Length: 493
Image (cartoon, rainbow, N blue to C red):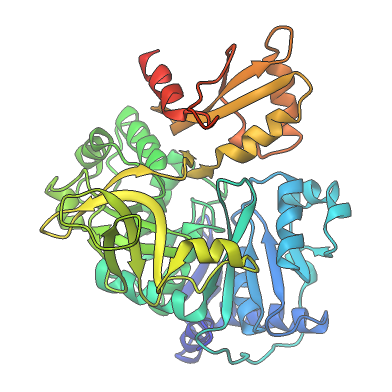
């Protein structure tokens, strides 16, 4: 079933439920939402987009994002949401790899692509340019590709996670079973990026006929978020742990209590126990934790509202969600006894079929139907999962994944850098921040020059927050950099 069927069903059921809002301004009811998406689909068809073609979205948060997403699916095409904070060259690489037939881009993102179009054989258009006669919903099989999600690995090159219509349906129904209830009276707020978790939660809220609100800022403004919660009431939002901390600090400093916040689902990074306890003190029992990956989107485990509110098992990421089977395995994938640390493995209908045109990475990640997450952890007798480490060394800064290798490659292309190793350092503001240990060829460390060099090659949020000049990097007998020693040094400092 085409995931856009849920939008069509809401329109057919009368369509008068309010659907899209920009700030406090009403944009469309469900009939209007569907009509705009169907016209967008017609515009795609008139440009030669056919079922299975990839259409990229390189846009900041806006109600038009949802119209474009569902218009792509009505046309039977595949959405390729691209993080709006990426550098133009990074976005262009994704367009090339996905063999995108079209990219929808606006504002700063369109400008960023303009300088990189030589490497992307893909036309670019704004949402306003894509319109036509309403297109009937194109049927899709459950196994057909719906969303191509690009996530980086330790090689520094992004990998395209293939997310099918079945996966999106399983994730959404699992949300209702394992995470939270949703009704037509609820509001979902898109403050986190719509290319990631916030956008993935759009489906269950369309299914239930809830309202969709994009803040006018398009991002995380704590005062604006709390004002919108107070205005609408019954508001749900997805938030990275750093967003929760910012909201908590703002509310405490401005004597706000979060009136109108119904549910805050947090994930995408480590949540320190002290931070969630502080948030509970300010906002009360509104928090639910999830753990997932792009390869099993948003739906590996959840820590219930009841557990979080009772401050029970806060150091864990909860129990397996309804749509998955969870295992902690050894190097061969065999299940380990309770309490033993091993690799977290997942199986179920929401696990990806593989990476886009990357058979080698798929073979490394999928084994006998099990997804090898690359994360380590342990299970207890009650089924709670405790994460121990991220074995792929990903740094999660402000809810955004930063992969050290791509930062290292950017720095190594600077003429003064001989060697470099990038690690994460704990940060009260960002959860983690990027630190680069640099071995120079000669001369003194020139941080502004390295900053400028990075900004010409990678997204601003990936740029190191600090540089440390060293004579040599710690290495093992095989010549591999021992990053644990660098993290220990930062902790001692």
